[in-house]
Image (cartoon, rainbow, N blue to C red):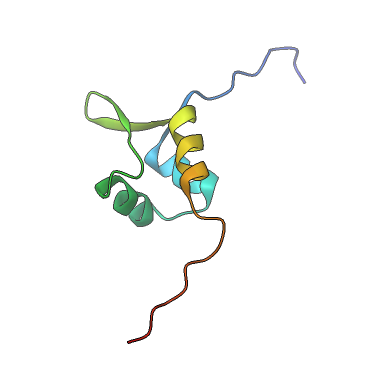
Length: 70
């Protein structure tokens, strides 16, 4: 290392957050539309804070949802 301390990211763009959590951009947009993931905004740019990202991940179910057959 070069001796410079590394800063932890406090917020992520939607593209960065999607990559970090292995979801598509479209999936994130669906979660945002359902108010399951709430971005902050810098002007018009949506940002996902570290705290909101953790809250979102913690809110996801532990098990895969089962399909309901008619």
